[in-house]
Image (cartoon, rainbow, N blue to C red; front, side):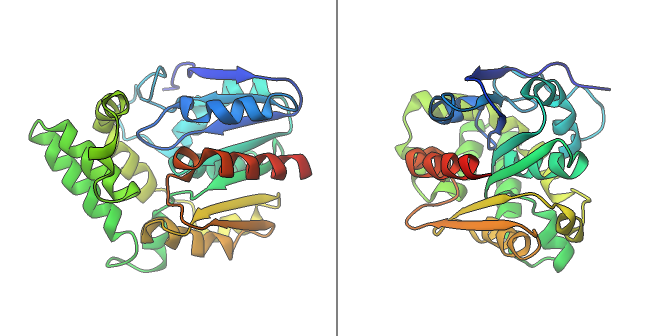
Length: 265
């Protein structure tokens, strides 16, 4: 069963750029990037399955990253060919799978820490660098089952942003995250069970900007170690004093890096 049309934001004219957000977020995280790119690019930012104003996954089976790619097909068509993909975390993982599935349509990738945790398990069974996120998902799922979505959200956010981050977050931001955290099992399942082998990414012969934060967790840095030595045309940028949520906590630094990359490729 194909998902319905995703919700998306759109700005500008020129070469197409499609932006994909992280878990517990929506396309709104890219508002500043849309404004920055709009003078030179046709930019679209989508809500993923079950996020923001996009539909939930209607199938009976578990959602996979390729289902997210299928949801985005109308945006890819609207962006024109070839288009660039920008992704953060879960969105960056979706961008990689999209580029592999239709390489002639994608001209470049700008990725901030794609969370393809299955690559870590394929390299070596647990215990490994994915243990932290596995434990976090288990604790969050237990909190959900106990009727405590705020506790689940706190566990998830503090893993990615550091202890105490949830408590410091304004209530206006906590609300949407608490609502979306019910998808945490689906997110983790899609990322931990993605079947694409590491060797497949060696065939992705397009420019890739791979951004990472110096203070990010072992799980996303472990994925970066594998992908940056496999992708054939990769340029790596590490942000000092920044963590996994860099596109949200330090948008100006990240967005300007993305702009410079897209202007060159």
